[in-house]
Image (tube, rainbow, N blue to C red; front, side, top):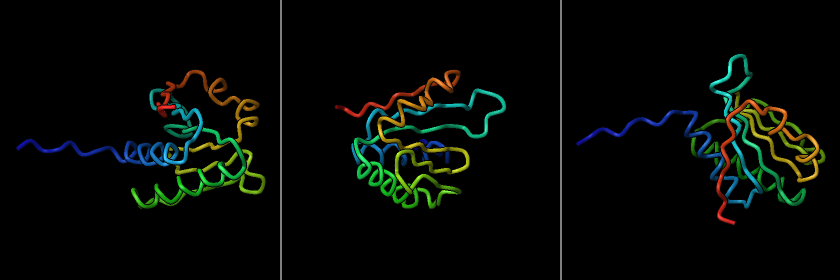
Length: 125
């Protein structure tokens, strides 16, 4: 019987994040993969937005809870909870950005990091 290939911890983390985001109807989730680039501070950004402060907060809580449940990891750092326009959750190798739509358009991280590989997540909407 063939042995199952052990899944990379980074892949497990990304899968937990993306699943949690899609569970809560995150808008336009993407992964910016920096793994092929030299001198980056992390391996990937996972970016999405919500339609309201309430949804951004729900997304954040669900992502943190699901990542803890599936990987045992707690964020190294988190910020942005005061006004929930842009919440950052740092898992060291993977950094999550959960925006309200207007903030996401304003900061446009996908364009800022245009040399990263962009992986669009299909949300079946």
